[in-house]
Length: 310
Image 1 (spheres, rainbow, N blue to C red):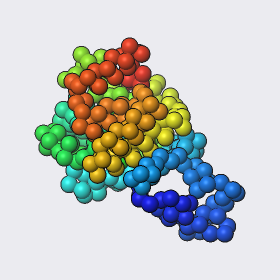
Image 2 (image 1 turned 90 degrees about the vertical axis):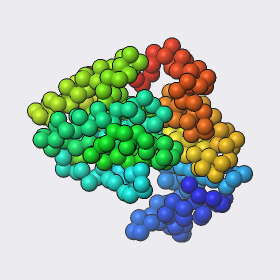
Image 3 (image 1 turned 135 degrees about the horizontal axis):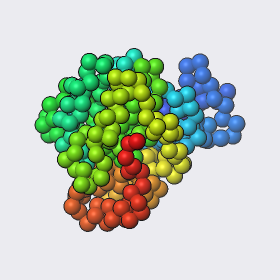
Image 4 (image 1 turned 135 degrees about the vertical axis):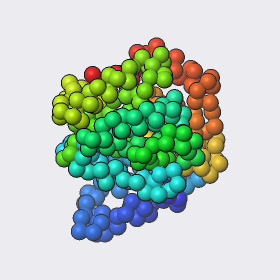
């Protein structure tokens, strides 16, 4: 997130806080240090590359659970493919669906399928908001242009969406109601059936449930499930991935791969880290040996995290 952060004061400043005698302060809010480091006081986990002076943070598992405790949808404002800001928050007051995808996934072909869903349910007031979890906006551009979506499409190179909403694979969706409450946590939901032989999930499973919620307010059984709890290791993986992405943008590929390997070890079933990382460092996320080995390991383990909507 920044360079040269070799002391608490510099890290605090980069995070928008100021070290004062009473502790860490931002505006009228102060957090006492009580002998703790800045990250510990703020409930953050740190990944750093001292050689290249890069530091990234992610909320600890306890901090994230506390932030999501009231069930409200986290704020989300991101750039579109041309760098213009688009906000999920702007759809507040309507039933809305957060749809996540990536250019490294076959779901890159499904934007038109989601457009058909949006067109069909537009009269109910339902609104779609799509986010590509990609390392570079240009990776997403061809698929956005091919899909001709009228709903907002953001490109999240920092994976803020994955961090705030607990997205570990794509295509995943999150339902948010008119009161800004998450009523269905992240679940796998293809936009259409182009890849049903691989996903083993019929897109109509999700779309039928979505129609009933949009038109009748009926929530499925799966809406009662809690979002999967995350560990500190999985949260730290997000910070390591962010360091890797920053280093890769500086063409420091060897260093990026070291941090990516650390992230993959911490969160072995997080596809945004594993498969997305292959694409980030120039590998083949579809047919390459690294992806094939990962896919075989994941498939043999029962496809963790890839369950159909019910």
